Image: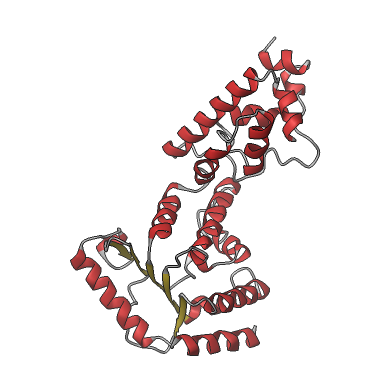
Length: 301
């Protein structure tokens, strides 16, 4: 008999799938095999949990019952194929009397949920003291509500798998922490008019998204400006522009129409992006005019 069958007293195929209501196979919590760092973090944690569980004298099913998860879920976490939820780690730390040595890994484990590229962007955002963003097709990711982001991500082709979709969504929502950081970074967004008018999801989703933007405009360190469609000549026709500036005076930027869309950090290239952004910002509606415009759109939706 296998170790699993011996512990549960049942053949492996008859093992319980978890307690009622437990979302053992909920998408978004699988480990991305192409993310080497994420794989390593979750695998290391799984080995630690398995070692501590066995040292404490718990079988997998006993441990699962103690923390409110199914036996299969425990095995998946310990095998490094399932990313544990924060409450899983909280309960495991308490039950296994780890004195915080499991909880301390929560941040690294949470990062493993996010796609590598998005994780790197979020890390840069978390360090920035100033952000400049011009959006020509979609709202900047951190500006999006969860339901708007979900609807937008569902439009992409080829379509994301359920697991990919949940990973992308959780990462996008986590980036909203940039608005509540202390000290607060200076955030400037210029959005093309069409990005505020396209009914992504449906009209109700758009309406709640516009209301969310109005809430953000009340923050003293946030400016949101609208670029009217009738502005015939501005240097944003090449696509998105983004610049992040850091405390040490360095910066990184990118534009769809510059350096093949790759991030750049050379001062000369950054000056060109800032020049373009400055012209765009000057040609857009003022922050006050933009608030009035968004309110007008709300009255029409």
